[in-house]
Length: 154
Image 1: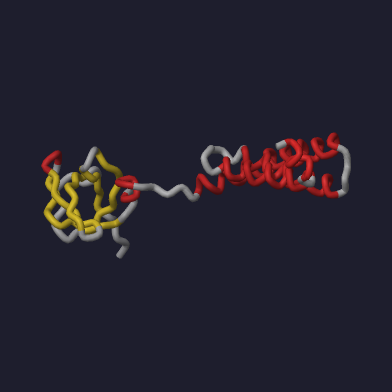
Image 2: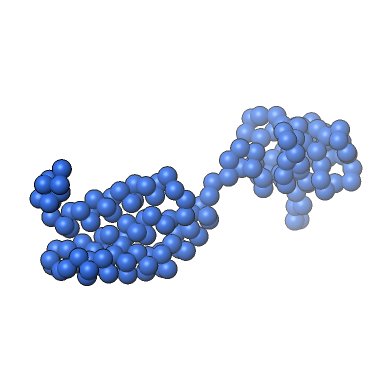
């Protein structure tokens, strides 16, 4: 096994290390291992120039630290802003129409969301919300949507 590894050019070992680190990043949060993968890619030119292992390790460390300092905060911010809400949380903020009058309190009523009928209670209206009224989904309690009437500018 060691003979096989000794036959592989050093730059290819750095490339394999980078690919492994990028692959492991998929199953770990935080964009940390990918920064070390960037460091491994930065070490490849030093290996191609046949510089010493010390220089290659320094390139790896400097590249990794720069990626951690510059790329990691940007990537975490980007992925956080592209976080997709799922399930009932994806409904929050949607505008829908009342399908059955919503009575005050826990009595509630129903709203139509993408062809489905959901039980809903009012969180912002003092009285009844008649059928056909446009409402905004503000949240949910278990499987009951919390809605408020949409204010229309005239």
